[in-house]
Image 1 (cartoon, rainbow, N blue to C red):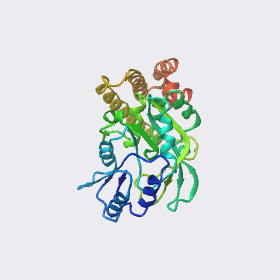
Image 2 (cartoon, rainbow, N blue to C red):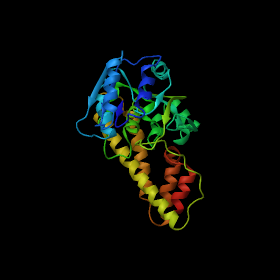
Image 3 (tube, rainbow, N blue to C red):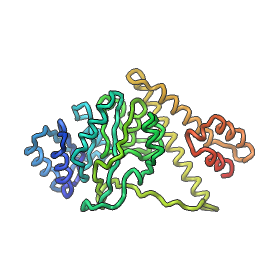
Image 4 (cartoon, rainbow, N blue to C red):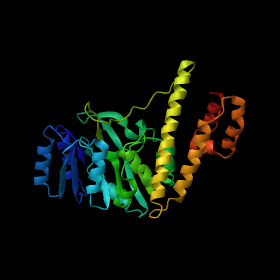
Length: 322
């Protein structure tokens, strides 16, 4: 768990961990320089806890990502579950997650859905998987061992719902600073590259929304008409930025996998990353003249890379006319 000025909501989160039907073997907390009552609360919780508690108080503020990285390195257990300071866990969360891991030693990562609630824990009628567009067809891909294809493109796994085997800490850490992902997305991505992933279609936490949280649940965008004129140019620019971010993520992932190829079987993931990066490079460097684009677009269609790494004919048509 990482904390920062979380005194208002921390007691409820702590109580939900303390009362788990499957008790954690240890609780590790890194506080990032809180100035409210968080430190006092943590010390009181630790003194009263029957569960071993490790508290670390940062002298300097590290920020959320580096603080989680530090907390993960301090864990000693074989499975690490991440926790925010302001949510509430379902009583059987750890039991359900442990059962999932016990299905196979090949399972490296487990994550679940979350119920999005307001600051008073009242339901909002929203679920996290819906908001991040983790749709049924994506869930099927994960179940079929193709989690890497789903997780490469953006936010799918919420850190507070995630647990992973500590065998993969050295692969996932440190968290790169140059990618458009935070710790949860990167950890999930690296583990999915070399291990099986289980997605639990149940909300195992209440994900609290309030004004002071660093990263709240996204709101699924409304479907809008195709942009035209200046809006089309702006849309194309944003799309190019997203492609650039994805290229950087693929490049960084390839570097990390190559660095650990002697420890993990990275061959399939590296082949996927190489083909995906090649496809993005083709699309990013299409000729200005539309007629000259056609041979490259047809080649990407015939190799089915448009279908594997984009939206098939729809993406090809956009590339031809944009």
